[in-house]
Length: 208
Image (cartoon, rainbow, N blue to C red; front, side, top):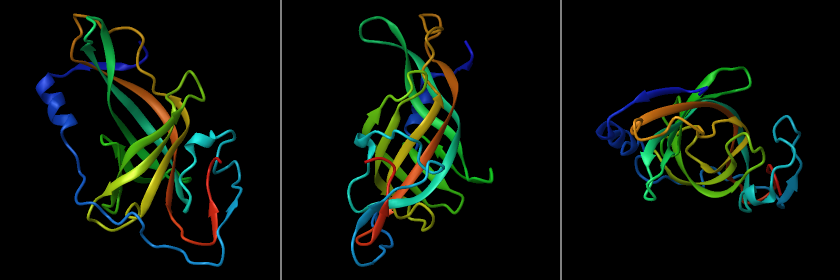
């Protein structure tokens, strides 16, 4: 298998899954830009990859805020399914968020959560998914559901897209009765597009 495996006790994993940095719910609206009339604008392919499915378009009234690269692993655990079979169950992402200059601006982890170096964070809830490349994890649209109490980069994020994914799929072997509790960390990369509310004026989105 071209991934790294190690064994953790179920108690340790339970503690991992039960951990969250999320504080109180935040104001998802954040700063709203006021202008004359809302229109949509195309974005260059350097920001949005071609062929973003319409199903992954954020709800109206949102505009692109920032785009970062995610580089890390998708974490899976070998478990016994109710059917008696064994399967790799998704646990959490673990990734660094990088800007265009390769500078670390934050992290992505269980929740799913995105946290900036300034302490602000957002937790997302999956709204839609699309398999664009069968060899990689799906592209996603997530709605921002809660924010940390720290004000900063992610305080006003309303939606997140996961696009341009490479790798990250669960292993296809190595999970059996002798490997229950084993952890697989599968490398992946993705483009994370963050959105904020915009009541009026030009809005920019990937997709639609």
